[in-house]
Length: 371
Ligand code: MTE
Ligand code: MO
Image (tube, rainbow, N blue to C red; front, side, top):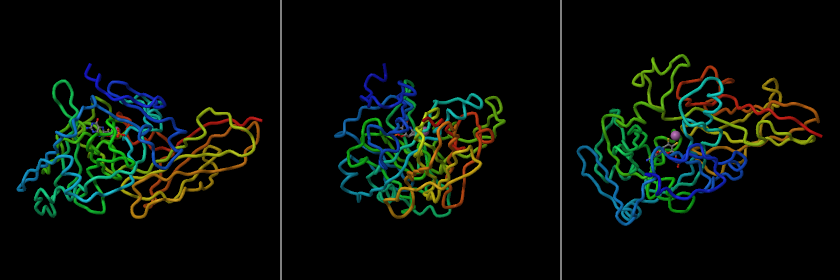
């Protein structure tokens, strides 16, 4: 069993697949704190968790025309200033289960919890690439390819890439993280080193980082080339051409209701609706609108104060309290607006796609009010 060496996990996690391990926290725990506790952070593994002996760990860095580096964990910690960034990671498949209800899709059936937030710390990728002697690639659309230490039986490793421009932009804050919420990275989240690409789909934040390579082409990996792309609702598995669509990088604006849960009976008097909202590219969420009547009338939710300055790499948690009368059947709905005034689509039908990615329609939660 290639998964026999996987680490123990928290019993509260909702498991979507055991081997490889994929799990999300229950919605009501997700928004209990701004930073998701490490043991509750959603986990998305494609392969067995590698066992890494930290003393013999080396990170290979390859830059064309530069010198190749082989960095130990101690060198990564000592040679480069430690940079901290609070960032939300979201899987492209978050809320996929709502898409499958319209028409079946291929992929893990995530509910609304394939998203979590942590304070990450590590070396800036930019600093590491400069130390490797990266020459000026101005005006050229190069890429930084990452490979993980996790591999399947045939030796194929997880890989992904981001544009070099993002890697080198100091304001993009891409780091090679060795800490998560003040602790060393847990095994499920990439011990000893992972990439964290704020504002970008989780798939590019490669865990158990083995190598970093600057290249004129995107990563040749399956997960960069033939997955994590969006398509027209009419495209099916016979007609799909993965080379036609760009790889997902920044994600669209997203929000969901974490409390109450669909089908809940809430007591009359005052209802409290809670949830999260987030947008890709560091675009701050400026507003969350909530409806109690399926979208006919709206109220503005209260956003919890944002603890950090600069770009909004992390989600906003929000809350709305409203009076409700016994006997009512409510359809709670939420939708967020980001700094670019981008909104969410009102229904799933128009954004349905065969892989079930980018599922960000208005989130709808039916509840009844009891005496
Ligand atoms: N990195 C490696 N090496 N292997 C993986 O399977 N999964 C990716 C990404 N990095 C993955 C990986 C995907 S699809 C996501 S959404 C995030 O890791 C999830 O990170 P997490 O498990 O820490 O939440
Ligand atoms: Mo993902």
